[in-house]
Image (cartoon, rainbow over all chains, first blue to last red; front, side):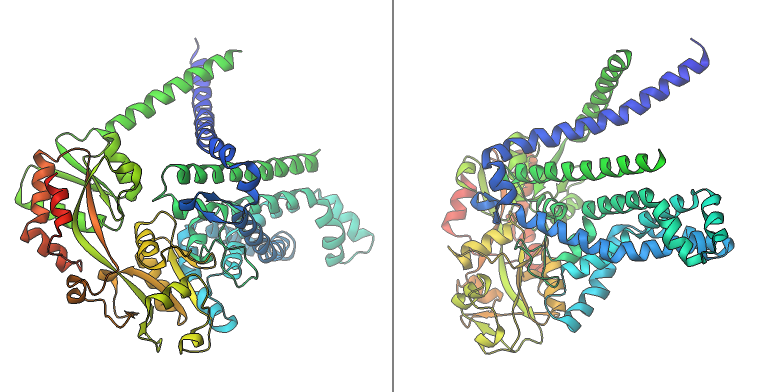
Length: 281
Length: 279
């Protein structure tokens, strides 16, 4: 076998090993989680609103709703900010300034989530508690922090897709007499739509998956949240906060929560993939 | 086809590596592994450290993971000793539980809260959300923020059993996953009420009197303050060798003194615990 062949094979081996680890993890989650879903019944597991594992009631509906609201909130915060930032970097500012700003934004992604959580707990939570009332540990605080955490994803992917547009789009719009703003709003953003949507969906995936910061900020109550000032629990924090003491059915219920999360994330990522492919075609 | 065959190979290699890693983790030659409750863990660590400084050559490994995990580990033989901050459940009675020390649970509020004293019944009603405003108890006109531990926690279980009885802790309660986190939330929120180990109460929060009785060592030892739970060491069979020696050290005046310094409460051993220890 030639040297090149050997190298090729070894790289294939390495690539496959990472896939097989993924498969092993998935297998384990399903093997642990599915039996409980079966035992409790899919309906009462997904739609039950009482989570008392010590009393055999396993309803994760409040967590699904919690994940939904926190994610939606983070998008409301993160998407306008992220889009504005992406447009600014790709269109409105001098390339040198963009070159300085870009790594700083990447740095946002490098900050560990526990730091975001700590910041939220020390700064945002007391602010919300004192000015708006409630416990402060709330969906609002969680959404604000998550909104900032998903910014790097949204900005960098949207900016890439804006910069990847052919120059002719811009030149054509200008030659028709459009102002710079009209060009951005009417031509460039619609043309880069698929990339932008993909960036939002990837940001959503990040928001749904975030655990540590949310354990610290959301308050983790298992009620159905009734306002943005009330505490909530997401699917991920449900696993994170209870895994230490869980045993038996309780432990399996946490794996079952993982199964639900698995499907949601898979769905979102496939959607992002499909949309970004469609854009390229 | 070839890819599938190769991937199977890779799977096997990966599994072998995993198995090797796992088995090397478990093999701790000649040491005593103590696993379980995160409430007991810091105290067990202090005890192990002290014990090892007097017995050179002996090794004691202390690890958290939770009461249930510890009990499970003792049963499967993965650990020699389990630590539990909750009593054994019906299915676990085949194991031997030895109370090593007692821990009281204090109900805490923000230090600026004007209330100092609540009845057991009032606390029960607060945590089951029948009473939702401080003004109903003579305090400020604000809604009460409940803070509780997560399901499965030994502290929560003890609180449920000793205070809540059949009532459920309200779903609207904030849930924090450690004593320290509860203390932090209560210290920051003027309207909060929570419960933690008495040993961890500091001047940032205020421990309430319950039915007029303050949570202090004297009241606890005289069985006046009764929100007390044992910290248990769990054994699969009668402890022997290093496990027995370590247990004897913990129950000796020297070990007990160390635990009392850490804020726990030594009881005159009740007939019950003596019997357990002898069994």
